[in-house]
Structures are given as C-alpha cells and as structure tokens.
Image 1 (cartoon, one colour):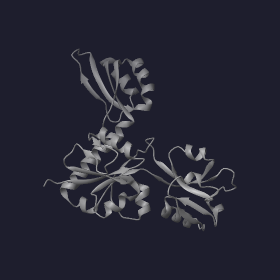
Image 2 (cartoon, rainbow, N blue to C red):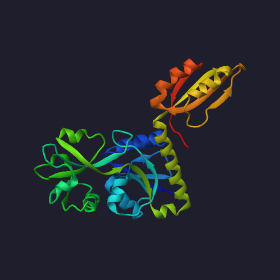
Image 3 (tube, helix red, strand yellow):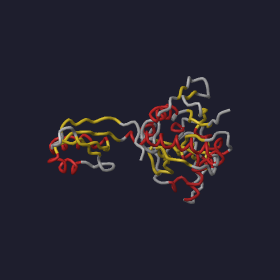
Image 4 (cartoon, helix red, strand yellow):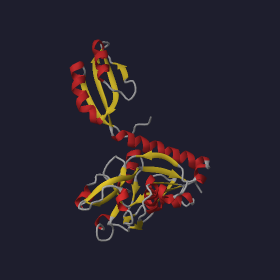
Length: 291
C-alpha cells in the first residue's frame, strides 16, 4: 500500500477559505457537505474534516499526521504540537484575528480589573483563565457553546470572543476593553509524522506551496519595456521584492523588466514607471511566490 498523509481540514468557519487556499496552492479538495472525508486530487493525501478546536488533540495523538488550525486552539489545548508554518488567513480577511475582552457599552467596565467576581463567557476557557490570573483578577469563566455576543448582560457580565473586524460586537452593543491574544492559522504536524522521512517531505511540500499561495495574495507582477537610456530612472521607481529581472529585447536599445511588487502600491508605481520611460506596462496576478 502506498504511503498516505492523513491531513486535517478545519470544519466550520475556516473550511471554505482553506479549500480555496489549497486550490491556489495546486490541490483541489472536493467536499459535498455530507461526508467528513473530502476527496483531493493527490493520491498521497487523505483528508478529514475536523473542528479547528479539536485539531491539535488529534494531531498530537497521531490520528492525523498534520492539520490546519488556529494557534489559539493549540494554546488552548495545552499540547506541545509542532507548528510547521504560519498561514495568515481567516474567514473574511488575510489578517490575524483577535480574541478580545468585551463588555456591554452601557456598563461601567473599563478594564479587566473592573470585572472582579464577575462571570465571563467564552469558548477559549483555559486561555481566558490564564489571562485573568495574570492580572490577579478573580472571575468565573464559563464555557460558551456559541452565540457568545448575545450573553451580556443577562447571562454573563463580559465575554472573551474572537473577532476579525469587531462589527458583530458593535452590532450587539458591546465594546472592546482589551485584547487577550492574537491568532492566525498554522499548519501543525505530529512528532511521529515529522520523524518519518516520507511524511516530513510531504508536509514540507504542502507548507511550501500553501505559504507561496499566501504570499502571492498581496503581490502582483509587473512587466514593461524600457529604453536602456531610461533604465536607471525606471529601476529607481521600483520597490522590488528582489532585484528585477532584466532581459534584452530584439532591439538592442530596449530591454524588458519583470518585477514583483505589493498590490497596494501598484496603482502609484505604474504611473511613475510610465513617466520614467516605461512602455507596454502589464500588471498580472500571481498564484504563488516561493521565497
């Protein structure tokens, strides 16, 4: 029987973003919504949908060789699970998420110390307990099964909840008074899998391609032609990832320039390239950037 890597895909809020990331990295994952064992177009990988909250446990126990989950749930589990690489993406954005301490807007609570003796609702119980203990504040931390934002003030005095934008908290008339921790997605692996040369190589392959797909999201390629006499002026405009590639064209007076830039600055750079003598400027998307 051929070697197989057992890979955990986070079920729930991260699932669609994770499947999309794998597609950009070169793998197609097919989940029909009923099976917990989605198919993938790689005979060396077996996928299983697992809640992000449980991923660290199954990887640590060796049930899964590797999986994707938030570092918040690894910390919450208290397990020593190796992280292979960080992958900063979430349900709605390409930013880290925050676990925040939030209270009703109408309350007089301004800081964690004001919650002495109060009830805190959260899914992140152990991290929240350690947070309040570090501040010397005695509170009762209760596990929340969901819809945490609606619990204050009737069912809890405050909450520790994850947020990307804070919009859901504002919609429920809550204000943030502190950040408990930041989190981002990690590719984690079991120690036994990393001790297996074949599995380690496969995990490293996945890490490189996922990391490349993540890094490419915020960047674009630019290619343009420029006369040799104007080359230095054009190069002075470019904030390159590395030195740009310069190729001779059939006309010896002209060269082609290829470079990678941050997408957010392309709108400023392109007009300046034209003004410096660039011609035939083309911006194109990138699938992967492997550093």
